[in-house]
Every structure is written in C-alpha cells, then in structure tokens.
Image (cartoon, rainbow, N blue to C red; front, side, top):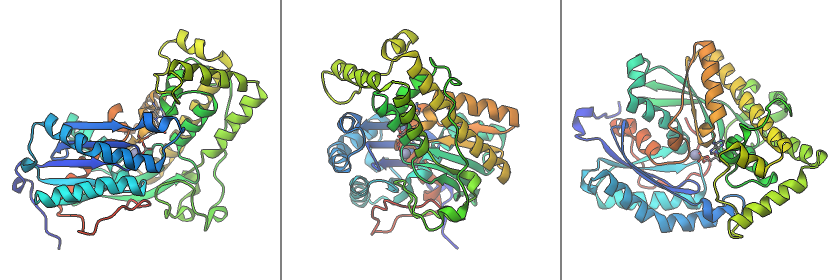
Length: 414
Ligand code: KG4
Ligand code: ZN
C-alpha cells in the first residue's frame, strides 16, 4: 500500500505552484489547497496579439524572461521564505513542449536546491481544482456536506473543451473522460470569430462584452449532433491537447464540434455585406493602438461605445454566435451529468469567465435541481493557484514526480 501523510505531519501545507503551459507565466502560493496567499500571472497577450495567436517559440522565450520575477513576486506577496514551503508543484502537460519545459526545469532546480518534493500536475486537473479551491475558500461544499461527491467537470478554454467525471477516492481525485471536442475548442472558436469580425485579441472577452447589445435570436445558428462513432474511429482529434484521447470510445452525445460555426459566421459575414465593416473596425482599433498589432485595448463597456464600433447587424451576429455556443455547451453538459447521475457540475477554463454562460448555466441548474460551480473569473483563465491546489491531495498521498520528469504536450487526464 502506498505511504500517506496525515495532514498534521505537514505543519503549514504551503505549496508553490508554477504554470507555463501556454502563454501565461504564473506562480502562486496556496495553503492546504484551500487558501491562496499569492497568485501572480504575467500575461504574454501583448507579445502574441500581433500574430493573432500564440507563437510557441515566443512563448518559451517570454517564460524564460518572466519566470524568476514571477516566482519572486509570489513569494514576496505571500510573505513567506523558500524554507517555509512544503512542496513545489508544476504543470507537466498538456501544453506547448518548450513552454512547459521552462516551468518544469525551473521547478526541478528549485525543489532540488531546497530539498523540497516536486509534484507534477496535469493542466486540466488544475482547471478542475480552481473550482475546488473556490469552494474550499468559501467553505461552501463543506457547508452543503457534498465535498466528497463526484462532479461532472466541463473544462472549456482556448485549447480544450472536455467533459470529465471527477471522483474523490481515498483522498485523491480520479478522472474519467466523458466527452470532448473533435476539432476546435470553444475558446478557439471565440478567438477565430473575433478575428474575422475585426475585433481584439483574445476574442472571448470582446464577444462577451459585445453580445449583450445584440439580439441573440436574430441570427439562429444550429449545431448538428456529431455523428456516429464509426465515422470518427481511428481519426486523431485536431485539438492541441490530449491528442491520444479515444474519441471513438466516447458516447457521441457528449462530443463537441466548433469548427463549423466559425465557417457559418464567415459565410454570414460575406452574404450580408459585413466584411468591409470588419476590415474598417480592425483598422480603427489598430490606429487606436498606435498601429501596434493587435489590439490589446479593452472592449467597449457601454452600448454607445459598442454601436460606435459595430453595426446592429454585427452585434446581432455576435449575440447569435455566443447564444449558440453556450446553448450547445449547456445541452451536452447537462445531458452528461444526468446520464452519469452527477448532481454537481463544475465549469472551468477561460471560457468559464463568460457572463452569459454563467447566468444560463446557473438558471438551468436551478431548474433541474443540480448545482453548478465556477472558479472566480480570475481563476477561470490560466493561473498557478489551481496547480498548487491540485497538488495538495497529491502531497498527502506522497505522489511525487520522478527525477526524470519532462514535458508531456499531450498528457491525458486520468
Ligand atoms: O484557460 P485559458 O486562459 O487558456 C487555455 O488553456 O486555453 O483560456 C483562454 C481562452 C481564450 O480562447 C479566450 O478567448 C477565452 O478563454 N476567454 C473567454 C472569455 N475570457 C477568456 N471566452 C468567452 N468569454 C470570456 N469572457
Ligand atoms: Zn488552461
């Protein structure tokens, strides 16, 4: 049987988390997976924005630049010394190989030099623990008495749209893949649609901000059900992460596909003469950004500002797109929760910051007598507090990384 620590053996339970899987360099200190002492995120948005997407080589270079100051800031803000730490946790995958390696190499050296155990965390497990961290901070699950019940988790971000059944067993969490996208992730669709409409980068916050001024029923988009398993058998999914996931073995009711809606939006833009407007918008945003591509300026925050940037037809298109994406995420997530008998639902990842998504999931859960939880909006996107929180049960279980730990770009969550 595996060795286990009891909580009392570990005086403070302080874990330093490090996350460099994509385009944020992040470090955080979390106590016992339940209290965030510091969470520092250095975003590379400005670096990648001009290319309209993350450039892997630039990401690695930026992580190298940022990792030391970010870790130092996290320790300073939490007012602890390296000698106070009980463990170092780092994202091992999925993600960009070079980007992951920066965090892993740094975490290994830090752990070795300070005689601390090193814990490897799956990035997707981290996103799920962002919800658990919030629950523990608010003590809400304990109050409800369901902290140990299984949950259906939707991880929905720029790289992933995955459904997992998360089950706590003997102190650690176990995961079963229930569904996933067969092509683009939902956040990827947000980013691509924003780009073709001449909006800023990343697209999610822009579409979130503008959708509320459009009529969500003016442009009805529909999602076809992803067809049979046979049709997908043997095909490698096109998403970046967890390429090995066996799509053909999943229930087709819980498969997502977001590449079609991007094409549908593109077709609508051409058919309805919205192309020139999108080009002008991009030119204006660029000018407002001193010609620097793109456009890290904030999305409009009032109806007046939204209408100054977009025609009503474009706002309706944006609202229709978001309505359809959120509707599809809801339909499949609730169906999976129902079919698995999971009364708890976690929604996490960058797209979980979306306001319409939060409102509609919460309303639907109330109608169905289910319970839906989100991370705080800041912990929805990539951060290291979620990595440190996910590492706490692994520290108790003495589940340490091997000395030869290396980056696993397609690491699957189990
Ligand atoms: O989790 P995350 O920071 O990184 C990945 O692991 O991908 O997610 C980033 C994604 C981007 O596609 C971004 O456009 C999307 O999350 N996003 C949003 C919102 N905020 C970020 N999508 C919809 N609404 C938002 N408010
Ligand atoms: Zn992520």
